[in-house]
Length: 170
Image (cartoon, rainbow, N blue to C red):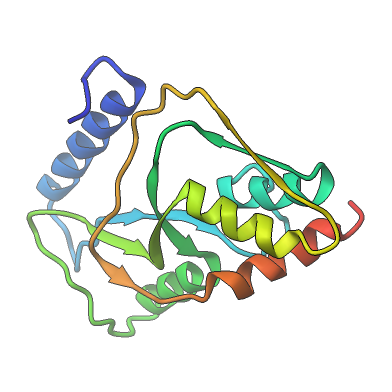
């Protein structure tokens, strides 16, 4: 359980409070409360500050990946899937959405630990050079995998795409 005075605890509390208030607002159409996984994937304006992107960039440029010293599960959401899903919602296309008025829809592509992704990134970037995985102390208590609408992705292929982008000159 998360402690209320931690940043993670406050984040969870305020998110749930906002969701409860949104449900109370009279809606003129369907209401979707989405909880998105941590987004990753190629985009025209790459965000290298996102966790998986940072791992790839650091492995390519420095040969070192730094992750928290505790196991941390995260739901991950592939960016092209998110944009396609949102466009379909706007255009009124139907999705097999497991939705409940009692809670949000979790939109993610897979659940994985940061350490598992770091190992995959290190192996894929490696080849010509060794990639070191270092751990650092972390006070971040967020550690969760989620149920929900999954769009399976092959992480290795997506990580290879990110590696190619990280090698491009800025």
